[in-house]
Length: 455
Image (cartoon, rainbow, N blue to C red; front, top):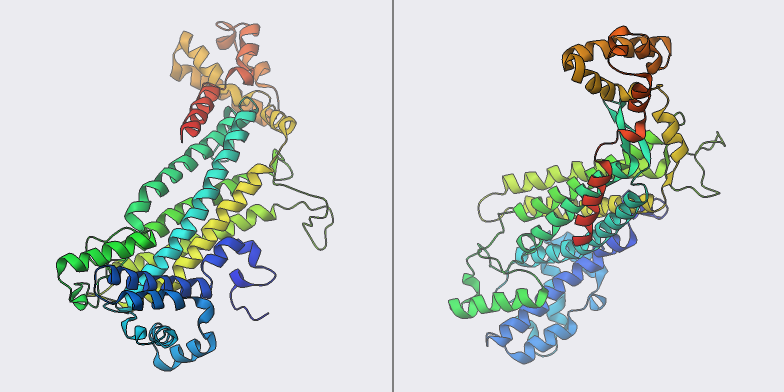
């Protein structure tokens, strides 16, 4: 075990990133993306008559990471201080005949590395978007199932008015749907390749405007990326935008996880993250059923949000026509934010899929304050007779006494002649039925589910 980063840890790595996303950003995947660029560039140049077709075929034949001497590559990078030149030399050396002389024709290092990282980011995006859609499906199923499950709404950490658990989940779902929309809208703007030469003027190709632009177009089409309108070596906003979106998505996942933790407290126990026999919460307290999965999601959320700052710095400080500091920063930050945000999404999906809902505890907590959760309903009904502000004062006095004396709100209301003069016992009891005061919760759930079905 020689890993220096928890994401690549042999025994902790799965807590911080899924195998799919780790594979996307593995060394060999990065190198293959660079080689894919070189092969596609050669083919595009051959198609436009800039290099011989035979040379392009040979370059493409040997542009495979398994043919690269990785030990020699590492030595070369350390000796030259340059991340790409050793790979270009090896690729040229693998070519038969004189095909190697056409490797990297007209390109600059950052064309290769920027496009390579964009290919990796695009692959990560597809995985994350897939998992986010699966999270949305899990939330939709849960919201529909719990559409009418009574729960205490909480504001400022205190009981407010009744809601349904399905309503709470529908709020999460609605936010998830917006994030899916944001990712889909951002894709054509973000996933754009780069082939522009040293100062991004494409002077290095020397083939005239029509053929130079045709090479660029062919190259990006083969790689599945957008064609840049102008070079972007010093315009790093695309990585920053993707990072911001991923940080926001991870933030949502962390918020959902935190809500589960709050509702899994022993004295609340309305929800519980998935649990199986053999899952251990404590090395010293055998009874513990700790929400460690949700705590892990919160950690991933924090990491993703912190990493976006590095990408914003690169976008804000890249100098002149190229700034290698920005590239180095993105090599570190982009993989990690994709992996941690992606793990937050997939782990949140798994929590929602296996979430335990304790409806009896939800109902017990609604009733815990003996009617105080319906004070608004009483105030509004009484306000029709004596005015809202006066009614607020009257119900406030009864509510404070009920809380401090641990007595039912109905009892104190009925004892107040200002209330009894206008509301009967039956009316008060009816107003204090929580299931009658969930407003349009069910309708709103249905609206979100309809939107989810159209997404």
